[in-house]
Length: 212
Image (tube, rainbow, N blue to C red; front, side):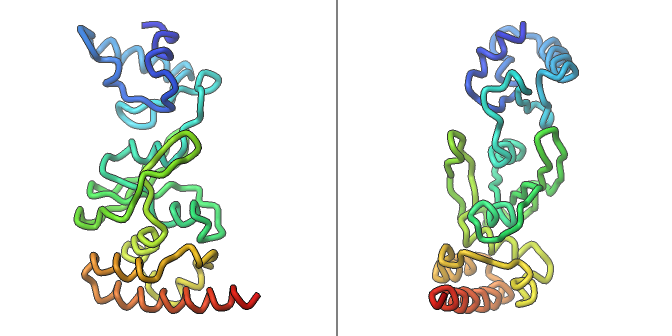
């Protein structure tokens, strides 16, 4: 297969899996050799085993980190600080894309960024939605679930001090009722107590915002 044929096969897709090239009577070993050559020549990025992206100047669109994260681990969604920054709820720029998943935790460094996966129980894989990223789409936690995932997985994050350090902003984007509803799914006294504190934090923050 020549490289132009690959570009036609993947079309406008920003990332692709090697299985796309194995349809029909194809020798998988030859496909793997060719992919390795294209990676070594700088035409492709290998994101993980079996997952690739076309490199500049051949790529039609740079894949969004959230889209890559969804493909890195199936049954995962972007959450925690990455989602909170996406919604403008924290002021910091987040350089690592963090997702939660029911699979094993891992950290992957790729030519297109660093990706971290945190493990949670499969029963907690909820509270996310397919979100438009300007022509690409990815599963991202809702603002409330992103905050709850962070509290659940980050030691000490339920404390008022940690919430202050987060410097939460745009608090009108958080729904206290949704936080309380979602916290029930964790079935944890710690989470319920934390949500009560967060809800008051949101109410106080909104009051201060309205007075400005």
